[in-house]
Length: 248
Ligand SMILES: O=C[C@H](O)COP(=O)(O)O
Image (tube, rainbow, N blue to C red; front, side, top):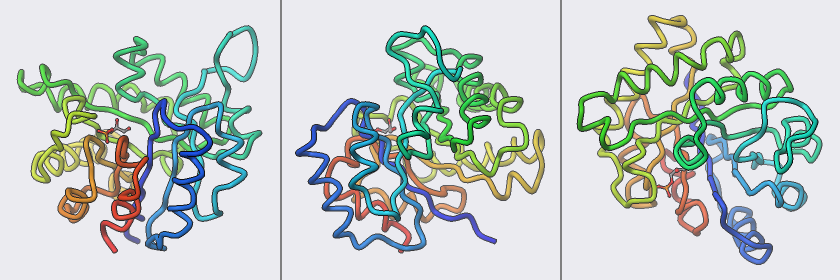
């Protein structure tokens, strides 16, 4: 069976109730390709609100969580809490978490392990910086980041989507070319084939993220190893519908 196209919207730290209402109304109006899975990653404080107004064909994700169920971790939220308000996904290891908040591979892996144990599905983000790309280290970096996740994912690959997001393409307007993105996605799939299994390599969905827009999504979405997108800025705009429909 083919891999179902999966488009995530990562609102990051944006939106208020008015803007959220507009975004949800726009998604309700769609129409959205029924063959695409849609997940919206919303600020923690709005998870319950978004869940209460989002239609059933849209899943809700948190943008981060902590690695244990509860306790003295001021300011953090747990997977159990995310589930409790009806969200079913969490985005982990986003490059902004890694660079601004200093999250290293091992912490990301601990978070992934705990989120999966609790029954959340995970969008796990990986990607190289411009410096790493220019030094020819793209594969080394994304393979290292993926390797760190293997014990955390275990037998739960069906609950994980990988998001390849080159850091130099995030929020910069510099979308990777379809060829650049396809190259990394194909190498990642090959690495998974060699280091996990051929079945999982065939089945795992790998999203591309980094300045995806209504204008760039079709060509990217047509690449054989690109199974969807993780969209930042454009997920706040009406064109998110076009991005969901990239392969329709
Ligand atoms: O999680 C989404 C990515 O950071 C992409 O953000 P962007 O589409 O604004 O470049």
